[in-house]
Length: 527
Image (tube, rainbow, N blue to C red; front, side):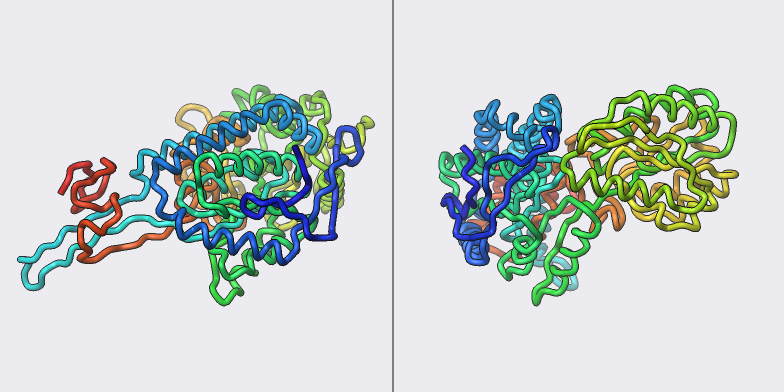
């Protein structure tokens, strides 16, 4: 049942006077539940509860945390159709997308349960003492990763489940041993509260400390600002716009104690069409990318917003086919009227740029809050000269850049900002002829794709979802996959510490039976 209240730990609270509702973009009307924004008092209570919970939660064993995470997954599944119904009512996304995203959320929870249950993620490293070393003895030094403290997670507008309340940021932080305070996204506050109730039930069932999770409502930006400014918050996870992420980075940097803010702030995800690929498979790739550009109304951070090629008959055929195919695809509902309005604003801005040609523009009437897919075209020279063309257009839009030659293609890539992904479409042995293009692109992205589409982020150990600024705030980390846990920890070393007082991960006998690096050798053997 959705109450519209905040969760301060396990306690429901609604002390404020600022209220709001969510919106159903499919029906173009407001939903009925009224949500109450958290007050400064409630914000402080949530952080204080998290800080107190951390004293206990940081010492909870890996097996206990695994039980907790699996319990969250079970409770989310127990919400059944209620969750799917409110998800679609608040997002305009279809039931199939809701089911798929719920599945991904459950898979993330189970994955991190396995990671912490096994335990080697702490990267235990042991350099045993060498008392007889000449000229000086070596001390016994042992190091592992430890949690840093309360984490604030901002729900993402485009993923009401997988990147929000129990999404990748939250589950990786809880797995690390950090309490989490979620600031729900106002566009899907009901979905967020339902998931919060599942987490709270799991907290109670597994006897986790009260305050290990809190959930706060927020209509505007004030709640988020106050959370990031709170001296007992130790890190932040954010998925959203460059403007929003940059603001949080600045707030965190200006605190008396600066803290890390791990942001994922969007990307235009360049796709490079090499000559042989356009010559031999122009129509195939054009049809594939028409679907990729419009998938989910283009509301993915990995949407292919930029396609680059060298002027040729093959590129002309690709462009013509892309135009003919993309206008055949039925327009889709966007997440919210504000998102649709911003999309139209950015498309209109692109249309007014000098030397930009609109080659595909759906002229049919569409329902309220639906997006009309658009393809624009510009020369490589003009793209380099106009930095505005690098701005992300959140929606089913892509810009085709036509380069005169290989050198101009390299220059186009060299002038680009950091991106989440980059894709190269090529035929056999063609990559060798464009090794410089590969090298330049590799410097600009977090994940490079060959002969595929970027609109798919597998939740695996090897996945990298992050890239050079402004795609993310720290390209050394990922927001997806098991390594996402590393954002919420710090290395901590013990020197000459009594074995019986060490954490189990560092004890001589290795009671957890985890892999450890002992004198540079990975082993499970006891010392």
